[in-house]
Structure formats: C-alpha cells, structure tokens
Image 1: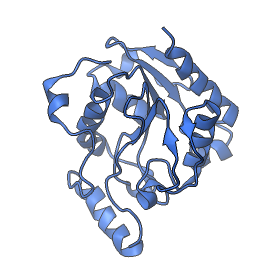
Image 2 (image 1 turned 135 degrees about the vertical axis):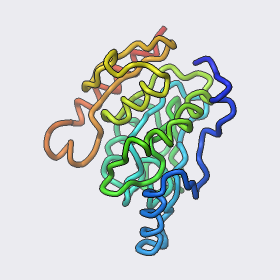
Image 3 (image 1 turned 90 degrees about the vertical axis):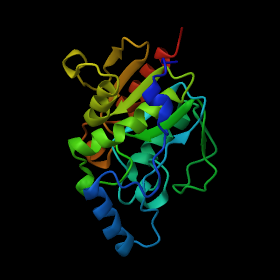
Image 4 (image 1 turned 120 degrees about the vertical axis):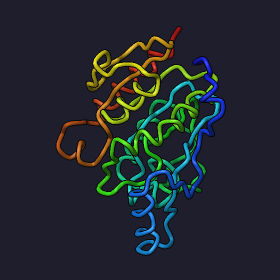
Length: 221
C-alpha cells in the first residue's frame, strides 16, 4: 500500500465518460461518434479486482479496442494476448470473449491506461498524458494492497515514474526491467503487447510471460 496524499484522496480514480480535459482527444472522439455511433467513444475506466496487488498500466484505448467496447484491452489484438497470458498466470475468472459483457473477471489484477481516451494514431501527446496523470495517481492510491505496477511500454513506464515525482534518469525503461521504487512499490517493464511488436518479433508470447512471472515474483514477501 502506498501512502495517500491529499491530492490523491480528493481525485476520482476514474474520469467522467465525457471528459473534456484534452481538446484534441475530445475532437477525435466526436469524429468517431459520427463514424462509429455504436462504439463506446468515451474515457475508459479501469477494469479488474478492486483489491488487486498488480496494476497493469497500458498506453491508451485502441480505436477498435477499448474505444469500441468500453473495457481496457478488449476488442483488439493486444487484449487477446494480454488476457491469454493473465489466464495462464491464473489471474482471470471466466474467458475473454473480446467484449465488455463476456463475464470475464480478474483476480489480484487491475488494468488501466496512462491516457483514458483514444488518441489519433494511438499517439497521445505529453500534455495529454499529464492531464490524465491525476487519475492514475488516484487509481493507484485507491488500491489498498497495490505492490506491483506492470508497465506496458515506455509511455506507461514514464507516466508511472512521473506520477510519484521520481526522475526518469534513475529508472530506465527496458523489457523485463525491475525497479524498486522508494515508495515501496515495484515497477516491472515490458514491451507493449501490440500487434506490431508481436508481428515484428520485438515481443514474443514467451517474453511477455517471463515479464509477468517477474511481476508475480515481486509479490512475494
């Protein structure tokens, strides 16, 4: 558990669905409402166990993934791999049907994103990450047993480090890197489980599983 600050206690861990903090993302969301009126098209809340010890931290909702379904990593390739590997670790209940009402639940894990709204070309800007950071801080403080942050990619890694005011130079991103943070949490890095990383061989399922096993070891006393 991390010590709660007044700022974290005052913040909601989840933004409003129609959050308007980032003008570019609001504009993109409105464009998608016209193109895909049946999609969720809003700020995506975290998903998982409210008593989780592991927080999986991704980049942002995918246009055909969470922006469509309203659940993190649901509807696109990255979620298929993520939930498959979480199931192998024994951290899921039920099966991933790739839609928000498939009955899937998580054990000891919660999933969130550094940015809660889908960005154009899946590339959020620095100010957009900053705008969403208070929600990340509040989300972490709302997990009473949190021990491990599992960062999917450098943007997620950097946002986690900056959330606590630590220096990026002291915590270099690298696949399977383990960082013991001064606040008692452990930050474990992995390449993002995106289709691009998998198709190019930058990340294999075996590599991803190894990183998850590293996160599991960090839970041990």
